[in-house]
Image 1 (cartoon, rainbow, N blue to C red):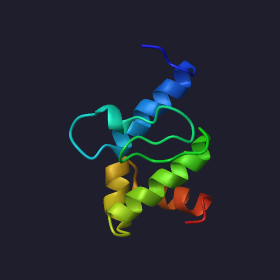
Image 2: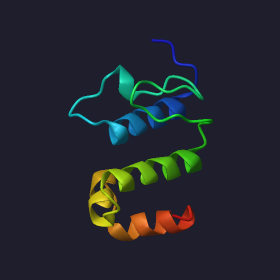
Image 3: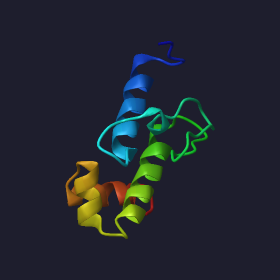
Image 4: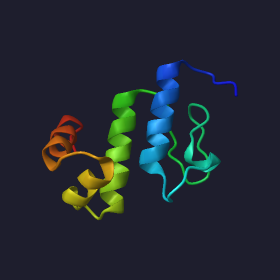
Length: 92
């Protein structure tokens, strides 16, 4: 398949899809295909800036877990301390 970016961008897109996936398997709707466009149920992103994407993902996971940092950290594969550090970095 054709990919419009480099290998790192592909890797980050796959990582985002895994983090944001609602089910146990990935589908086309889990992938963001281009900047500023969102698939059904996906995140709308203005850019591929990793800092902005990280903040958006943390916000979504915290909302999904009703603000429970322990559950959000587990879902993200982080320790609570790491999640708190990232939240502080992004002003959350």
